[in-house]
Image 1 (cartoon, rainbow, N blue to C red):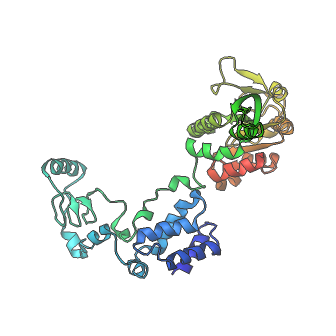
Image 2: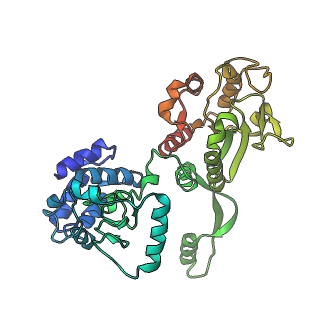
Image 3: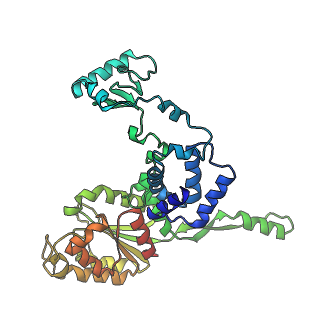
Length: 391
């Protein structure tokens, strides 16, 4: 049973190795994780999963492999969790019995009846057809049956009654295939940070002070050193408007995360593709325009160039002079992109569209070609790939 579980984890994309599987077997042989299924779940996850981004995949694989296998768990356990014992009281109704149970007659009647039950009911109820409870035919509660009810206090459907913690998907947002929130972006961007001690000696150096004091025969000799600072510099160019409108919130979260992680961050905006002008303000109004050539001359080549956009447009906007939808650009967009890439050799393009959709759009494929393939999806895994390219 456990060997099949190990193979399922590998098939699910979790990089579990034989030594980790042997560690789990050793822990079980030592008596760990055998008292109940939940403890076994946590033990297995601890032994087999090295990265929290894979917790959700582990949960899904665990649920798939052990769902309904309560009897199989008896080989590992000496007792059942109390809530599992409570669920033994659930009624198993035949189809004929289910057909006899009537709904209350629609949403309004259901909500009004629920309000009355909440006012009237004073305690826990089990197995009935009226009150809010468990294991009955009431339209309100958990682990029962009703053709039209309100589920209260139950994480998943009754069909999954042998699955507990791992069916709750607590770690879904950590999966490296999901789009990012600000918190996850901050965690991912920290891989790009690089610290160095620069500036005046303003930070107390405890280790050096102890060493110097000892060498001076006990006379206090205080040592100071420069503060450690993140020295990575980032030039962030973000596409706004048009097809990027659905991703405005995601781009705002990326900017917020980058601003908190990098002291040296310069951001500009463009529409669809790079041309002779960029904007400081995402509304591209109020005199915030700046010539792209001036940007190229302002920032040195040690800046990391990060471009964010869906690259979805007419291919003429990339390949032809005058191809821009907003103005008559004297030079093609591909010319300006080439200049930027030459000025900033460490670069990456983040695309909020799923990677699987890229090959359906000619402009995305063309942009990827111009970037030598350095386009990455705006997910946790994609951001990790981009950071590797920027180092």
